[in-house]
Image (cartoon, rainbow, N blue to C red; front, side, top):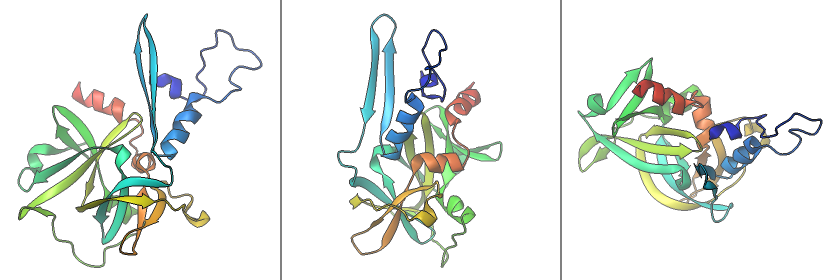
Length: 221
C-alpha cells in the first residue's frame, strides 16, 4: 500500500505526454507530515479503500511533551507519540539489545530501532554544561523511551528526562537553520526559555531509519 507514496508512482494504464503531471501522493504525504499530521490507508478487496488524514486542530498551537537532553529542553509533538516506556535499572540488558552496531528495544515480541537524543545532539556539536544524573522514577534509576510514529516509521527515542505536556506556539526557524532536518521549529516555554521542536520524520532520516519498517520485518524473520 505504501507504494503509492513513492515518487513517480502512477495508476495510469498507459504512459502519455500528460502522465505524472499532477501532484503525486508522495508530495501529499510529505506536506502532511511537515504539518505534524499523517496519512493512513485501509483497503479491502471488493469493498473499497479508506484513506484517513490526521492533522492538528490548529497548526499554530500544538500539544507537545517537553523532554530534556544535554541540559536543553525539546518539544515532541504528541500527535507522533504512540506510548511511553520506562525501563528500570538492571532490566536494560533484557529489553535493549544491539544489532549491527544499532540499539533496538524488544517490545511485545517485536524489535524497535532506538535513537538516543543526546547522541544526535552531540553529533550536531551540542555538549552538556555538567554531568547528568540518571533519570529516576520512585527513587529508582530508569531509562525513558518515547515510542514515535510518523507515516510508515516507528522507532523509540531515548531521552534523559520527561517533563510536563504543554500547548506550545510554533515559531519558524530562521533561514540559517533551515537545513537542520531534526527540528521543525521553536517555541518559548512558560518560564521564558527556548525549546526546539523535534521533527520526528527528519530525526529518523538523519539516523538512517527511513526504511526501518522493512528492516524490522527482516530482523523478526
